[in-house]
Image 1 (tube, rainbow, N blue to C red):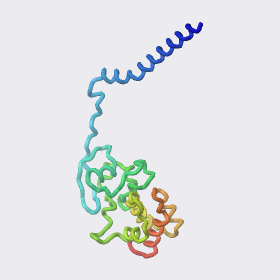
Image 2: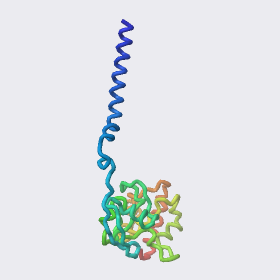
Image 3: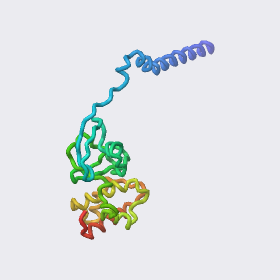
Image 4: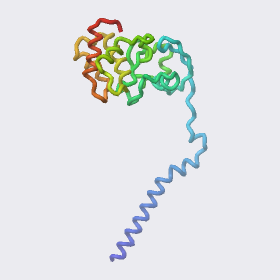
Length: 201
């Protein structure tokens, strides 16, 4: 009886192992059987776009699937705009499109054809910092600095859209910008100080 149970268990084990092996090897076998052109993805078509980036007209050919974030960083070399979550939840990639803040990871480059885009690199006037950039320095609002470009771009929009009437208003507006270092109070201080100064942003 024990011998029968042992043999039966071994037979079950071998049968199950063979089934699992066939299951895992099947995709490989199927891929080998398919024509090469059906396995290798075809490159996406290129589209020509023209837009104003930081005051300069830029013309380029972009992959139709490329996000504005990737276009700015990889084709224009504007790496100040950071790549964080790539899902529109951290705020590191925020830029201004036609004056409105936008998560550039959620917008295709192609959709911005003919629009005006401002990134963190377009704020300073030569060696003269933008008022909010200066306020971030004064208020020690830049810890590691990775989120800072997105924080500043959102902060400017907050003031322009008249959402900086109180610290609570600022906190609410800036809730989409994540700071892993936890410099939230300093960030609010910087935005509030520029709002109070009345300096144009």
